[in-house]
Image (cartoon, rainbow, N blue to C red; front, side, top):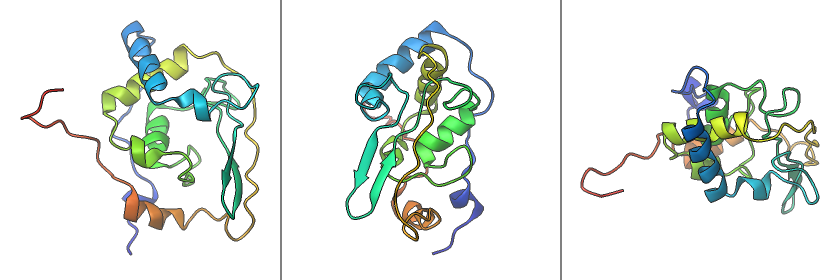
Length: 170
């Protein structure tokens, strides 16, 4: 398998900032509920979207969900729309590390650009910021190395958003 720069570090087609637009916020809230983001990004008895939920991976250990509140230090507060897009649709973190597929980015890869913008706008402007660090996973070496996930992405991760069919209604 060959890994090109696109696979190792996909570039987002989305650039710039998102404005606090009420229509986008409402659409983003709808999408966050439809995708049930709160189920994975909220620990038991934790604050909404602050992460920390343990996700057991059989035979390997646990990974923990990330804080997707707009907190500047521990959440999405310093993320750009492109950073968010790369994580949600391509499985690449802000620090350019592959995400474990416990984050279902393969399922979200087909989300439209407009829907990614709406989700990011919702998390940026409507969700309450919560300062909460993400615990480190407890997957042991060498299974904790993330570079092999790039091969997994080549095999299983779609790289283009969904395209509507002209002969089908929404």
